[in-house]
Image 1 (cartoon, rainbow, N blue to C red):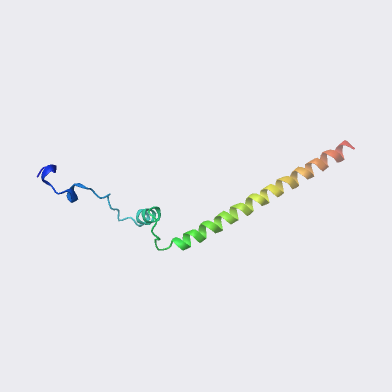
Image 2: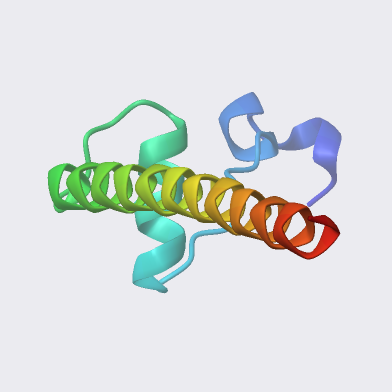
Length: 79
């Protein structure tokens, strides 16, 4: 059967379907559906982002502390 004699509905191909749950989840998330478990992932993503921000701030503060102590040590030695 040639393509010209086939109905249009048969000519339009659907994207390949995957049975892998991760692919299904990501596809549903990308097209705007609310897949099961999305709330938990959003919550976890928020928790990780908050913890990363906290760690960044702590590292910055510790770096300033070390820099201050090094400066004090050089001033003490110069005296």
